[in-house]
Amino acid sequence: MLGSGDSSYIIKLRGLPFSTSVEDVLDFLHGVNVVNGKEGVHLTEVRPGRPSGECFVEVESQQDVEEALKKDKDNMGKRYIEVFSTDRQDMEWALNAMRQSENGFDGIPNVSDDMGIVKLRGLPYGCSKDEIIQFFDGLTVAADGVHLLSDYTGRASGEAFVHFVDKESAMEALNRDREKIGHRYIEVFMSSADEVRAYGARMEGGFRSSRGPRPTPYDRGERFAGRFGSRGRGSFGGSYGGSRGGFRRGAGGGLHCVHMRGLPFKASPQDIAYFFKPIRPVNINILYDSSGRPSGEADVEFECHEDAMRAMRRDKNNMDHRYIELFLNSSPSSSSGSGGGSFKPNRNFRSY
Image 1 (cartoon, helix red, strand yellow):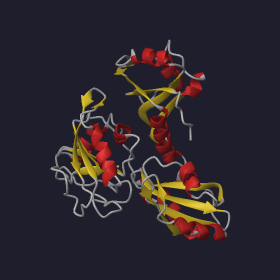
Image 2 (spheres, one colour):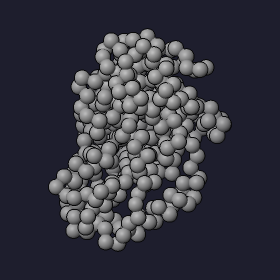
Image 3 (cartoon, helix red, strand yellow):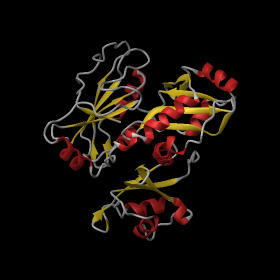
Image 4 (cartoon, helix red, strand yellow):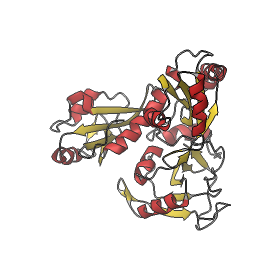
């Protein structure tokens, strides 16, 4: 983790050309004092080798934040750059999510039959390796023993393999089944070296080679329009947290969803997660129109009704320069997902 950052000053740049370097960012922010120079600039990727067009920059003071905000809508090359004030928690979430791609299964070491291995399911958005190690506090996780997994689209699947120093420790780890990280119940299963090898074979075979580049908020509309034309579509891939083709039910058996309207068309799932912080969404489903372009709407699912109610306090708050309308689709005793809200969930979503 990057630290609590109570006294940190963080800005976020969006709309960067994909060829942007740290030096380009520092040139753009000329006159702004960046903490530790190049080390204070954090370019992000949606997957290794695929820049997101966004970065976070640590600056020295509130005056530097204000100076940076004056550069909002200034150009870098032919692109205008959006500049926002943010905080360290936002940056941590973004970098944790990026590490799920960078340090996931791709970096897994060779496994042996002597290892104790468990598999986790149901990890929350942005979950870090440190949080998983803390989840197993009191047990000895092997060095470099946490491996966050991705689905065929390159997104975090909400699953991980965890290696322990011996099989006895892995057996003890099973006692953590259904304990929580944040508001999420985590399922813990016994795994094996054979399962890890099989996963690796799928990743190195057609599972990975068929995976196309993940679109960013800046090229999503054009890429989807060309791929899907005017046919429209239902769910795309598996949603974060385990649902496929529909909403996942919360621990109490009901659906705890907030519908968003008025989103900027380039809003990303990460932007939506930031909008609701410190409440952690379970699923973020951006909705698209029949031509495959973002509709400006999204369905956001929370673990419990209380979280959904807290999220509703953000109604009419702004994302960038647009105010967002929120509609509640949750009730304490909901079992069908229709309780409490006037919004009927749209099935035409892309899951994150």
